[in-house]
Length: 371
Ligand SMILES: Cc1cc2nc3c(=O)[nH]c(=O)nc-3n(C[C@H](O)[C@H](O)[C@H](O)COP(=O)(O)OP(=O)(O)OC[C@H]3O[C@@H](n4cnc5c(N)ncnc54)[C@H](O)[C@@H]3O)c2cc1C
Image 1 (cartoon, rainbow, N blue to C red):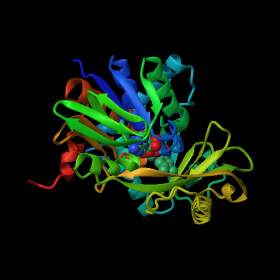
Image 2 (image 1 turned 90 degrees about the vertical axis):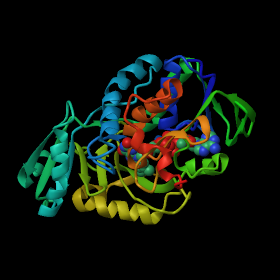
Image 3 (image 1 turned 180 degrees about the vertical axis):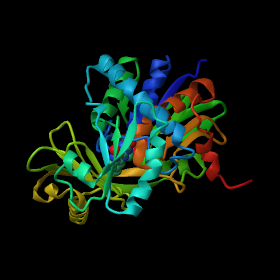
């Protein structure tokens, strides 16, 4: 099918994955990014690939999340071969801590769900087994759910590897800010800071800025930014034996030799500056379950914005009244694990008019006012 030039807007993990799969399938692709590839959340995410929890899991997001996880295990070798970039994708066990019966009950759903995931298993540890695995955990720990076969990667290098692989397949990756879309008859064009580009199809992967497309398209794209911060820590002694999770916070050893700890969920608009308040709050919450961080030094603090829809689910699909224009955003806390699925779905929609992955539940039409 000749889809003409496909323009992907947004050089985050989702846009770069879409550009990669499109280019791999032979489309002529231009990727437009207003700043630099991976300059927003995709360049600063923790990089945990957990298909096991979050909004819509278990539930409508389950399959997309699982397929994203499986695709990552193949992509790591594929992208390394294509680009030479090693983005440190590797299995890293993950220990979910429970300090009370109620905490443990909250983890049961994850324990059950693990049975569905190929190559992933879980087992309960009592408090003494938890301390044997990682003796520096707060001794008041009651139980732990150890997930074996979880994966971790460097999200910044991963996103850049996708863009570079797309470029090597012929995609034109450019810096330009998109300011609008125009349809005249059967012609579609993209307005940019650098002039106008003709397009056969367009994928809007604008992350938290997807709401800007509402005025371009005249349809609601109700995405808002949810700020999250991470501290990259130098801690005394060895890094934690596995990734540690408690409630919505975590600590994990990364390939840069530092221990990354997070995070926050802040509704503060598009302000993405690191703050002292978040630094104190993250240190306090993580030190409560992994005390060595209180003795460490902060090597770097980062802040960035997750794209979130009102129902917490992604928005993937064609835009009503705009043939050939597709949205792919709203991955919230899971955009790295979901990016191969969202990119694959966007590429399928452009090239085949339908997605091989189940994305109907994520159609932008769910936010259209009833006619
Ligand atoms: C602290 C934190 C930790 C996280 N940890 C994880 C994790 O461990 N695992 C996980 O799966 N997810 C994680 N996430 C979530 C993940 O980072 C996001 O869901 C994901 O990066 C979103 O990707 P995206 O491509 O949709 O958006 P983005 O990465 O925001 O990319 C969108 C791009 O579009 C560009 N753009 C916007 N408007 C325009 C325009 N008009 N013209 C041209 N370009 C434009 C932007 O500059 C940006 O580069 C984390 C998020 C945070 C904040």
